[in-house]
Image 1 (cartoon, helix red, strand yellow):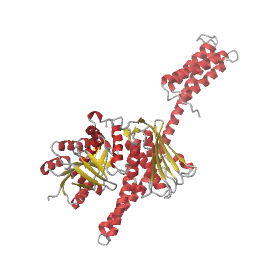
Image 2 (cartoon, each protein chain N blue to C red):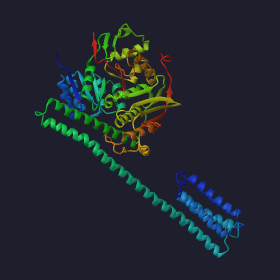
Image 3 (cartoon, one colour):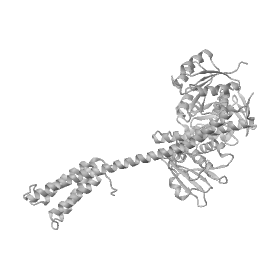
Image 4 (cartoon, helix red, strand yellow):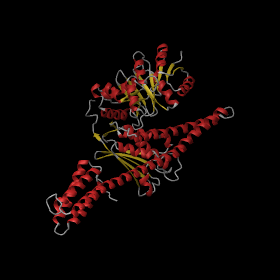
Length: 232
Length: 361
């Protein structure tokens, strides 16, 4: 099997060196671009499986590069950003980035993000074996079982679970969730989202206060984690 | 020292108050003119001008000097109710009055300006002192992790073949620990400069305080090293509309502080509840508490308890205070009677009692 190819667009030589060692050691094929211009050119030539894009590039803003890429590039793009710039991150996610990492990031986190961005749930029947419980979700029959027992979810609650499962591992912004589940007129109704997240957690999590499936991304959104999942 | 100072008021207000004062004194003198000689009245009016000069700006004082001279002339110098002065002595007196009132106004203003300059100089010196404290504290708190990183990575490069696998792992772990420490210090400095530049504008949105409190505890798992942090937050609280990111920082810093400084046996508890229209966060521990004399200084920039060994720049709590105040709230610290410190944060907020029964389900 051909190794997964990753393009890194980042002007910091140190970061590129670090990513080079980390990713090659883990079996990925890596190409580097130090500027927006080169990044866009290489992306077109190689059509890599995934792009790591730094938002602070010297010649052009990462946001612009993201928009240009998203006109034709359909594979995952992960944003690299400086710490605690939530507004920037949310903006990039809404423009089509799949995920984000804030510098400084831990190696484990980087690999987890890359792997979950590359993973696609193609089936409608998915089982998650978490540490606290086992979840079986049938997207067609719209049913959820926790440890073999059927859960009663309302239509909206299931819509939310459905959206999370289809975007497993990917961070979804508050606005995105509201638009997809309630509709474009509801994107400012974050209180709906808070109430439903709490409600769904109570049903699918064993410890709703220490969730293992629906994780909070401070100030950005939520992420459905299915790290130990087996896809049938 | 006179503590009354009207110079912050608008010039219009200053005119009204000072003129009213002069007229009042003149009126009292007029009513008592049977008992007072008109030259004594001149002295009383001069005192009035001097008092005005102490609290008002130059122009209102000059206007009052002229006004009181004219009042004195018109109502008190014989012949009364004319501006004419028949007596040479009185003419001289009137001119002297005018000059003295004028000099009085100018001199007082000058003295005050000098005072202000001295104050500015003192402030500048204080800033410089603060800056030096910052440099001292920084060079220590930043250099320690940097030295660790340089030393450990040198060892890994130069002595790679002599080191055991376990030693290599240990050195790498030291580098990792030092880098995280460095990262935390830099975040604190960035937050401080954000506060200083007035760059903090809260972005309020609805959030679930239970979710936030548990989220922060989760973030601090590594630092807590297995030490339990108790959470007492009821389930039926309303949603609050505040800046999630800022409150996370506030709680994070307060909890991190408790973890570092409270003794190992101390129990740390976080409470959150709704009081009137405010979100209240209480972070308490059963440690020694703070020395009573130090409580007022705890939120000062670069303040650190004497003999506190663990690394820190003394910025954490002043950032907490800055963030809480940026959201229109307040923070206080108390010692519990049985020992231990209690931090209480109170921030007014919009509330929402929406539940999923009221929303499309």
